[in-house]
Length: 377
Ligand code: PMP
Image 1 (cartoon, rainbow, N blue to C red):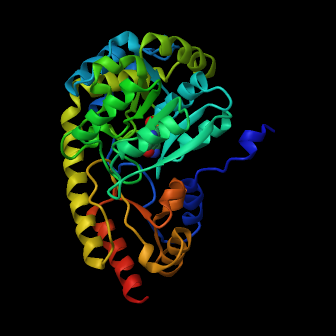
Image 2 (spheres, rainbow, N blue to C red):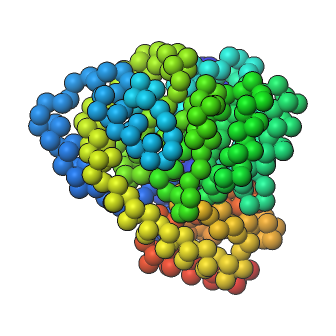
């Protein structure tokens, strides 16, 4: 076996989810999977693609129609990439894996936020890179001073940014984007910015990729799992300048050849005709965000109000137990499952992640049970 692979664990989110599936009748708030159906027009367009025989390999980078549609869509977010700077992947997951494989040499240091989506650390470790964590402000926003200090102190080559954030729901502010742009300009680093939740920002959306003058230093990762509620259809993309694209493309090509043809056609329709469905879904998530936040506050949790994605990350510090212990107790006593914060790295300890992509009814039942449990402590 490869020692780097042996030395990493399967994701703590999945580990806990597998445990939950063994508890009969448990309400699970663990998955990052919207509970909406894929928009009807996307569904129809995928069926049409099958009927029309669009079931053969596509170009490695994906069909031109989709790369053009993504380029147009990103312009509405003030991000400029041409269709040649877009590559369609098997979810954001494959984009991240291909990017890191193309970039990292053993021993290269990669700055990764903590808490964060667990894949970043694991991929870097598989490739023999060295992970250096950076901590965030108390409200999980970017701490630019800390970032700048670590980049210089550790001779960092790569920085992972992850906003809107899984697991905290924090977003990149305008001020942070502008401070960060100075740091990127002044240091010899590459930013990998994972913005898979960009379509689910409740207020304004800012991205480091909006800084055109830094394009040679930024790789933008996104996807449609969350935006179009199509997690199982496995489609995402990354955007990068040519110097990165030509190397990442080799990894992508030898690994997967291309993303699934019919899903690519579905997303072309999605970007042209289903953006209103995304707004509707976002409106629903906003209501749930407000509901869950208010309930958690009234139960007595210390919690930061999320500004994007569909997760909330309350502190459990005052309960004097580890996040794993907390989640196991609530699961065993009340049959409600949340993800222990330590699944998201060292700085996730002391928190739990609640996913609110469930109906208000289900959230109400789960939160009432958590409330009962807290009162019975
Ligand atoms: N990045 C983040 C922050 C995520 O939360 C996820 C999925 N939960 C991904 C990337 C990967 O998503 P997918 O492969 O479905 O596009």
